[in-house]
Image (cartoon, rainbow, N blue to C red; front, side, top):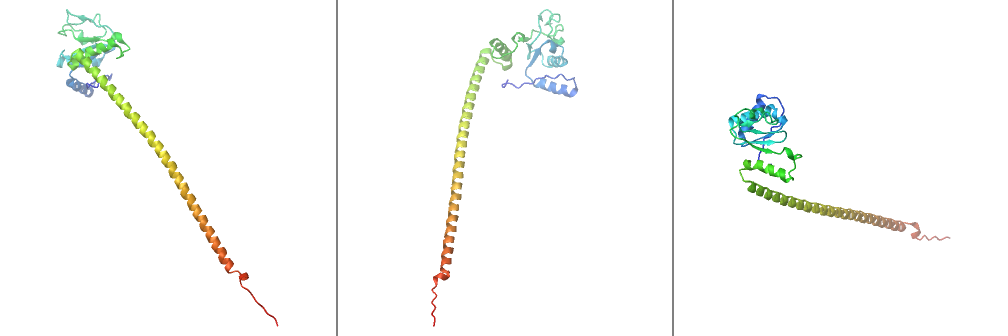
Length: 228
């Protein structure tokens, strides 16, 4: 999916000139058209419109069918899909001589629920992708294996980087916590030292005041009196 740019029309809106113009622009830019066939798509107005436009402007060379549900049977005599048997074919493909050859159709209707881990389903998807990529099956399968290995390597590298970043973040958090504890301890020690200095200053002031008070006391001066 990442190797291709896709335009997927899944709208059920009524036709209008603006929307139809955008769809035809997308169709004109597309290299291939994949029509997913089912009883619902067979009666879809948009499928009929887009398929008719593609056949008129692009022909059959780049048209691929994928049968998701229902039945499809080719009528070689009339060069069409048999309308008496098919319930998944749009009416435009059941008109006599509408097709010069049988279209490539990949039947995935028996693979639901679709799972890429299923080898049979993967083989059918590969068959659909081969003409789009312009590669043979073995080359496309090899490219897929290499892409998967590359994705696995990138995933492992991403996990390793995330793990390393997680360890770094944890170590940084622990270091910050220790630093914070040391800063708190240093601040408490600074406050204690300041309080001790203030207490020592107060004691020194008290001793000085006491000494000054003793020097100024009257008992320190002798008073001599004589009589007669």
